[in-house]
Image (cartoon, rainbow, N blue to C red; front, side, top):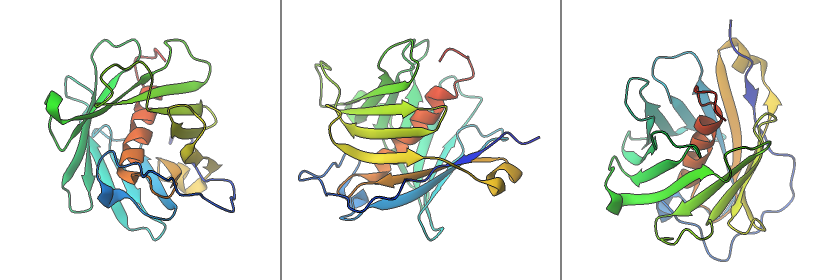
Length: 216
């Protein structure tokens, strides 16, 4: 029997103020001067763990995320519409904070590290993740923050101080998703924000919260 699935949409908003300084973590080619609405669909019953597809409002495939349940590390690769690897990310083994590393392309070399994501604290009642860019060598503070309720599938991604939101996700029950055994995330990326970066963060958010070990 299919697991209950959810679709995430944003509540209506009238304006999206573009950031003065564009957020380009992966590449400027993934930045738009307007809000970008994406649908991220996870196939729940599959041997190919980490299999997601990402489409725009017209249903056009923008990205795919692939992974394998048989690898030593939980490893995922974000591909563009032409199947070119954009980002690869994997979980650190035996990490209490569920730390993930994201690299450019299919690399796992430290020189190609883009960012890391980890739980802000080991025990959490509500989701709170710290995103640290590779250039932030001191790691004294995070560059981006993910906050919200995973149970309600309502989260925001903001700049490190938490005052400026750059992307949101929200949920709405979707009967079609339940029937076809899928989990579907609706995400709105704000203007001047790298949407490939946001897709990677949402997938890592999913993986951290759906960790099979049961250690949330």
